[in-house]
Length: 324
Ligand code: NAP
Ligand code: 8YV
Image (cartoon, rainbow, N blue to C red; front, top):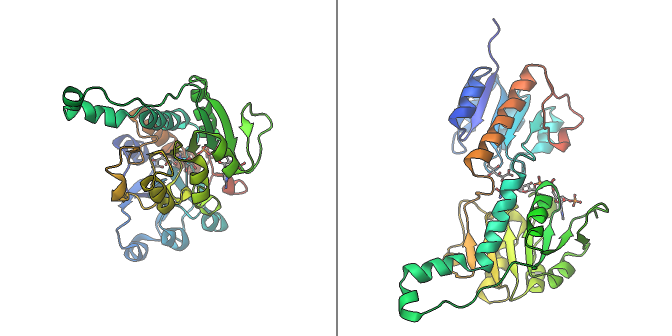
């Protein structure tokens, strides 16, 4: 019987994924802190597949220097942390996990919006600090019902966010590079104009060079001192220094942030701000959704080496062969 193909797991996978992969692959493990030169010298010729995740990605040296690497299966829809241009130029197919996480990430966006608008954390602290007893009722918050919301990125997840916002009768607008004539929502080609017209902006684009610092100081100033910024996309999409300054100076009202520029580091100045809610990149991080993402990740890897086309190659790999 032929040897099972060798697959390198970058960072962590679940026990369920490990069990699914063990049937078809010989597994090796690496973390981002490892000496990749040593790994390449030691078993570089063996490795034919990599399983990684959207947050950690694939170290570029592995994409460039594993001579027999054929496919990279990414847990996560975003793949800005893997150099896909380099991979596809070497004939390496990259897959990701679209759609199975749409509703979860959309719920995370709504959770952040509701938390900041209704001042959930200050209200919790009002009770636990005893202030309710000593100082009486807390000040009023803001309703999300009927709020004007602008979504930056109206793709799979952006549309799921919009559908959930409809339950709150929100007035929904969006900004993308290409207008979607089939969309029921109001299109703005100019992001600053949209920011001026809405109370809340929810960011849900891919990361990478094309969206780097799309949310500028001008966008934040247009959103204004009553405005809310929710970012569930990538930290790189928002100019984080400009965001911190706008919050400190009261030029921006509130922020709900799931993603940051240099994760897991978060600007400490945000920690004590009452007008901010911070979460550690948990957009899709429920047992149910991570299981669906893990299943799709392993299925793509198994199918490729069984000679069946992968299910969800990233668009940049559209022209590559989808199986062995
Ligand atoms: P998608 O279906 O590909 O949608 C992406 C949207 O962004 C499209 O509407 C696209 O429209 C727009 N867009 C792309 N570049 C843009 C630019 N430069 N300016 C304005 N709009 C731009 O992707 P998805 O499945 O919804 O996922 C979106 C992203 O969410 C992922 O790539 C990932 O970074 C992030 N995400 C985060 C979490 C989390 O845990 N927080 C979880 C899942 C996903 P145009 O091409 O017309 O511009
Ligand atoms: C994951 C994500 O947290 O899908 C994405 O793009 O950001 C998240 O769902 C990430 O990929 C780690 O698995």
